[in-house]
Length: 142
Image (cartoon, rainbow, N blue to C red; front, side, top):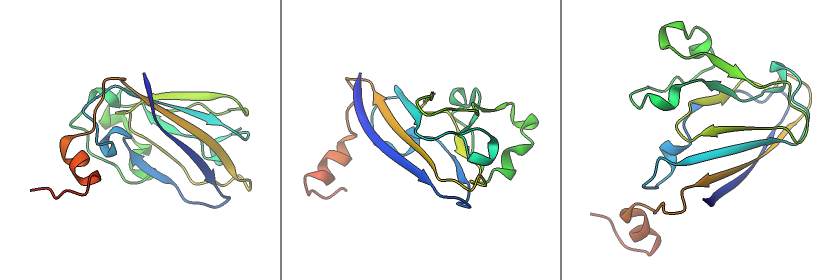
């Protein structure tokens, strides 16, 4: 296992939703082995505090299209995925999700900044796709 990236998330009061996405879709890696640990740094007591929402089981459906709004996922019965939130979370509580789990978060209506820290781990044998390495070295693709 190798650390791929860390991220700090500060979601201010009244900040809008984070649209549905997969983490692995944007990673230029030759692996499907990715897990993100999302650590609450402030209390996330209710849905108004903008917890992460997960489309349970979506990591098994590589043909799944994106839904760009929370409203687009509210009625998920036709999509086969139960929406899960792990609120309430206290500082120090964490969630974990696979890189292909579809997730997002609703707007922050709590009146307080929601803070979190994420650590993403990948397979130790994972490598960048060759074109990414060439670009990083200043080369041209094509």
